[in-house]
Image (tube, rainbow, N blue to C red; front, top):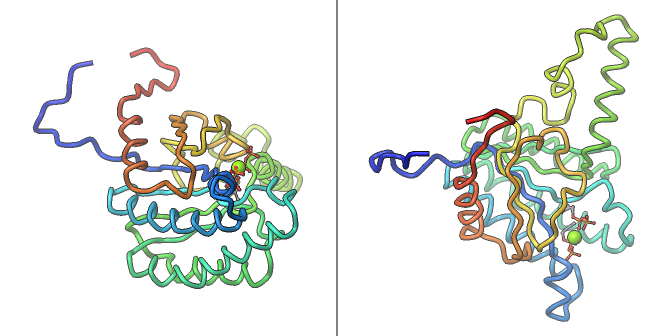
Length: 243
Ligand code: IPE
Ligand code: IPE
Ligand code: MG
């Protein structure tokens, strides 16, 4: 490929960056602290990353905060995480709104506490018209569960005679996912050295570029986001075609 002409300026950032925020527990353990201390520091990394993404001109930032499978953790850790989520929603939404950020939550809300669901509903309504950045929080989220739920709703439409089986195409499936209307992620980052997807955006991430880094989530910030985006810009996205 020919180098881009120098007057072109820096390449635009990926439209949609998604992050598997991993390593809070190991960060705490390495310091002899309880896991909760890692989650608390993780919430600060969320703040930094949201701010950096907005300033860099990213349009969608999806953060994997709690998976369907994380409900298997000890009750004490789950309630600490829910407490932090409550705190985040109570204390950050005003700042998100002020900065023009729209909040959207994807995942199974039925398993979240009623007060948390109310905070989410309020935050989504308050920030619905904002356009600077869409922050998507994946909470109680699993890609397989999302596809099962979508399948059920599509099947119900077919059973009710509203949809012909032959009319089911990729657009119909995508339109029944939690992420309907949100473009697929261009870049998926995972911190903490683990190299797996852990049930995150299984459908949507079909052609995402993957960047794995050793940094533990509590240490993540602007520089790490910039590094991952630099890696991304070095990739050649072919989508199965020749070039
Ligand atoms: C990520 O950190 C946060 C959540 C999954 C909620 P972990 O809690 O998974 O930290 P490690 O992987 O044990 O270090
Ligand atoms: C993935 O991290 C989920 C989130 C970051 C919210 P986990 O720590 O739960 O994933 P595994 O268990 O290592 O695959
Ligand atoms: Mg983990």
